[in-house]
Length: 318
Image (cartoon, rainbow, N blue to C red; front, side, top):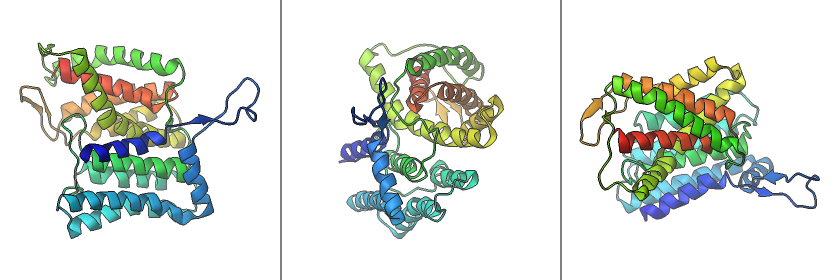
C-alpha cells in the first residue's frame, strides 16, 4: 500500500510536467505548439469557479487521514495541523483574486516549507522507504499542492516544470557536475564532511542507478522545485536575475540544512545541528544548481545535477 500511495503522489507531481502538442492543423507552420493539459484543466476549473481550489486540498487531506486511520495514528493534533497546513495556502491564494504579489507568494511558499523543515508535522503518517526516498507523504503532498497552486491557480511563470527538451538541458548539468566535483570534493574533505574516496566491493551499476533514482525523486526534484522553481524564481522576478540574488537564494538553500545531521556509511558523525559545515557546502552547491537552473529549460536538469552530486557523495565519499 505504501508503494501504491507513493506512486500516486509521484504521478500527480509528474502530471504537471506532462505536455502534448496542440492540433497539427492549428499549429503555426514549422513549429509545434505545446500545452499542459493537467495545468490547463485546473486553471479553467478555477477560472469558472474559484472554490475548486479546495478540491485538490481536500483530496490530499483525505489521503493523509486515510493513511492515519489505517495505521491507527489519527488524533486531533494530526487532523487539525494537517487541515491548517493543507488549506491555509489554498485560502491565502483564494482570497487574493489571483492578483500577483511577491510577498504573498513568498508567504505561501514559507507556509508549505517551514512546517516540514522544522518538524511541525511530527505525528503525521509517514511513508518511509529508506534514506534515499525519505518521508514521501508530507513532502510529496507538499510539492503536489505547490505545483497545483502556483502552476494552475497562480499561473506563475519561470518555474520550468517541464521535461528537458533541448541540448543545453543535458549539457549544463554535466558542466555543473564537473564544477561541483572540483569545488565540493576538496572543500568537503577539508571540512572533514566527506570520507576518503572508496566504494563497496559489491557495488554494481544497478546499485548506482537505483540510488540515483531514489535521490532524484525523493530528494532532488522536491528540493529543486521548492528552492529553484519557487524561491529562486520568485526572488529573481522581484529583484532581477543577478548573481547576487542567485547567491542569496543559495544561502536560503544552505540554511535549510542547518538542522541536519551528516554522517558516513560507517556511522561516523561528521556534523550535528547547528551543522555549519553542511550549510557552507549546501550554499556552494545551491549556487551551482541555481546557475544550471538559470541556463536550462527544465527544473529536472538541476534536479539531475543535484541527484548526481548526492549519489557520488553517498556511494564514493560516504
